[in-house]
Length: 484
Image (cartoon, rainbow, N blue to C red; front, top):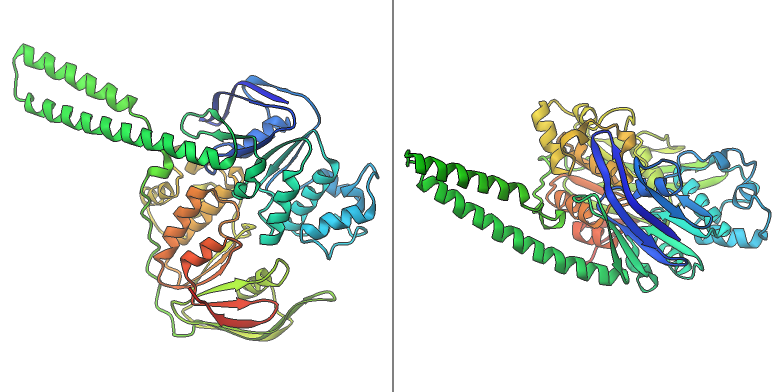
């Protein structure tokens, strides 16, 4: 059971929660939603006492356990001698139980004797999820647990969570997969800074929220038209310089000012987002050609004799299960890894904009403004305008990159692609951390891009809307035409 009473929490001068209250009953299944950066992950930290509210309080009954969307450092993992010790510190599970969950989480290659500290960020996150599922706490908090899973893994995860016998609160853009099991939706409203409660499943929430926003948008438009008419009236009497006329003007101006101040903010989903990537610099007909690339890690062969090419202006989707070598191929193209054999031929004018789901290109100690400034020679006004189009406004631009949520880092990463006229974009899972609004924002900006593009995404709708002409299958090393 969780009862939150009048929670206030801020980050610098930016309030995250104001007088926020909510209730979660014992053994409930709750979806936590809200735009990227609204405070969902922060709420989990408050619930687990990693951080504390400045006012208000939480009443929590039962053992609580949380898995963040990115596991960068885990003290328990770092002090575990093996995967077995980390997953089952109480020694209460059989090996086959642990191996079964690891296989379902797409970690069949991991041995219980392995050292967990040597794995990638995505693998560590999956291990942390496996540990939490085996522990079965009274209250389980999961922040985007399907991020690093393919379609089959996502379906298994949500089916498993649907049967979870205790309280579950989950942040996920795959909530529709858990729809029939959800009891309640909690929404972090980024405008009011409160937490709104919707009893019922995710589908009911989407329907009810849509209806409420339609009414709100209609009310805002009606009020805006009223303000315009009043301003026209003020203009008509502006020439009246009599004492009575001056009083009328002052009173009318004050009324208009009060109405403008009281005007509700337009819901983010209702705002029209216009975004366009810059025109790419000129490059030859065949900007990138890969011949016979192979790559192994120890005894494991990841890529074998891969041939790959992309034409100017072409979009290609890299397709394959997790571990098939998609990210490895990309890192070889980006010269972050060296192939064991083979050759990569690049046009001299090739300029690559790279998005990585692990954000290797970011300096986490820099501000958002400095991060974009490093990419181009714009003045500060233009840079802030660019960041504003990706929903970073006001003092937000002076925050450190490290303080951003996964979805905000994604938006920032895509924003940096706007700062330079790249002629090839390589996008490795650009929708991993995004809410629905941010996915649409990113998608619309990419659809108009005229350069070449290599895309990896586990979101089929995202790939379909970008309409790649070909797809490259791994580990089959096969290129085929896309059909729509």
